[in-house]
Every structure is written in structure tokens, then in C-alpha cells.
Length: 121
Image 1 (cartoon, one colour):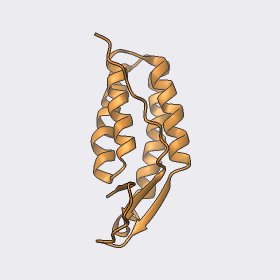
Image 2: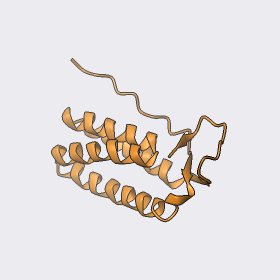
Image 3: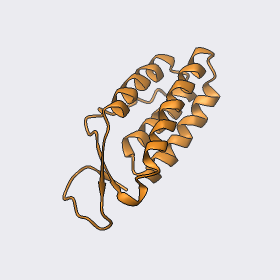
Image 4: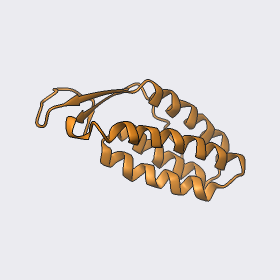
């Protein structure tokens, strides 16, 4: 049975992050950019097991940092790799690259109420 994947729209590019994470977030984002390059390499050699592992890591790690759309991307990478959907993976990587490049991170004070539908950590 084929599962239909809902690709994130990546419209919500603003993520609110507690100021105490300010030193960690740039490192975290740089690591995701490196992961994207590695996933592209895995696609080229059809190493879907590695893509699945990377997707699984994204699913958990990105959520713990508050990047829910990146976490959802990890879930989709994991699913696409199981069914070896090369084109879907490449499309997803294009979209997530654009998202990361235009990401707006807003640092907030602890307990600050933003009254927003955006994501928070």
C-alpha cells in the first residue's frame, strides 16, 4: 500500500528560540546544511539506509531544538528512503535548502510570550 506523503510548504520561516540557545543555533543550522549535502551524495549512490538513518536523526534532533518543519522533513526523508523514492527525496532537499537559506530566527527572553502561531523552543 502506497502512502501519500504531504510535503511541507515551508511557508513558516520564522522560528522563535530562547536566547540561551543563541550560541548553539548557528552550529545546528550549519550541521543541517552539511547533512543535506551528505543526503544528496547518498541519493547518488542509492544508499537509502543512510538516508533513512539521517531522516530519523532529523526527526528527533530538529524537534528537540524547536525546528518542527525540519523534524517533519526528517520524517519524510525516513519514509521516502524506505520506499526508495529518489525523486521525492531530491525535491524535498531542494525545498528544505530554500527554507533553511531564508530561515528567520528570532531570539526571545525566557518566558516571553510572542502570541504567535510560529514554532518555539
